Image (cartoon, rainbow, N blue to C red; front, side, top):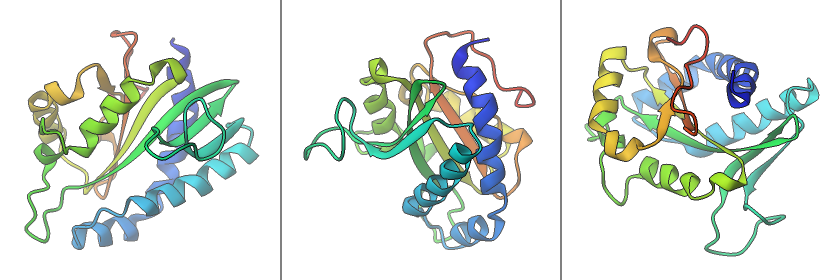
Length: 199
């Protein structure tokens, strides 16, 4: 089993449990068609602090500049979180993906996988792909409300150009109705499997 899969098998269920308890928040965000990414970063910050206290995370840093200490310089790549587990760094970006369209916006699933320069998900895929020598790369997308497995599969198929070598190792069929934690990993091993219970 790849080391990265072992890491996520230990951490991802804990992170998902943390956010599962926030049903009211997800439903409110969806009702108001809101993407409040700062809230997700703040919640993950507290979650990681607890995971560090439990010995599941060695260390972590927010707004990490690869190869630098502190904030780095203007214009340099910044990663939402660097998470160190068993001495190995994992670079992690967070994305809030509201698909409720409650306010009549165009933000359905296909919106996030469109091949355009201003596509924020595509930008993160590209940014982390360019930093693969700095650590294992992950994107945690909080999709709310949860899409059906069929709609998710169709969106991924349409978005192949954007997704590239990234693989979503989680599946909306096993999540709550109010949100789906889509965890993406940059594939170095095309045969990497989904996590147990996610296929």
